[in-house]
Image (tube, rainbow, N blue to C red; front, side, top):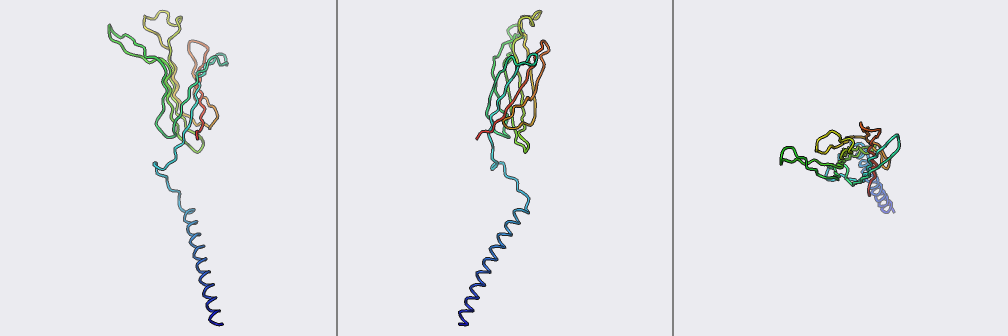
Length: 186
């Protein structure tokens, strides 16, 4: 009987010892992970999110939209800029028989970075076109070009349109706005 009691006591002591060691080991692991500063994730393991940017170039007159041109592009966060280019290369004769080509149209370049408070947007927009005939009076036979450029950086919230820049046309009562909406892709 004494042997059974001693064996039972030894068995209970062993089980209690194993349970205590497991609890201490788990507690040590938990406290180490919470006390330890967060380690920086290497760039190769960092999750890259994809986004779609919807851009509108709005032409306004007396506070009303009279024309809108829309563009869209997909890009990755923290990547190099993405570009859209639409237009025509126009030859301009500098000297007899010597030409230089000028790009006329729309050029848009965008880059984004993720931040805790939203997306950091970097937008560069250049729109050029030929001047209307009455603005070209008195100029030479070379085409007269009109150009607007907006380069902007701002923080945007997902799904919320934001005007990143606007300019007034000096020859009319028109205003041009560049509006961007960012959407996260899955």
